Amino acid sequence: MNELKKQGFAIWVADLHPEAKTPDTIPIDQPLAVVMGTELAGVSDCAKEMADGFITIPMEGLTQSLNVSVASA
Image 1 (cartoon, rainbow, N blue to C red):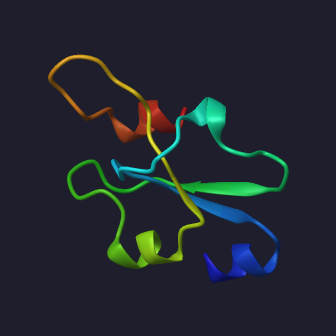
Image 2 (image 1 turned 120 degrees about the vertical axis):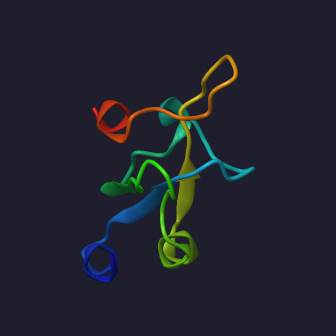
């Protein structure tokens, strides 16, 4: 993540953070990288601390989980 930041990338972390934005609302005026965590634990605290922003996929119903490979696609 440090190397990506040096190269000018914004780091967006997939998380249920209260200020998370949906994919269609994140700024795309610079290169960006999306960090996806594991399906059970999510992203690390370190990744959250380094994040420039948080991204979430809105879902309806009782579940708040998508398979990480499906969400990445």
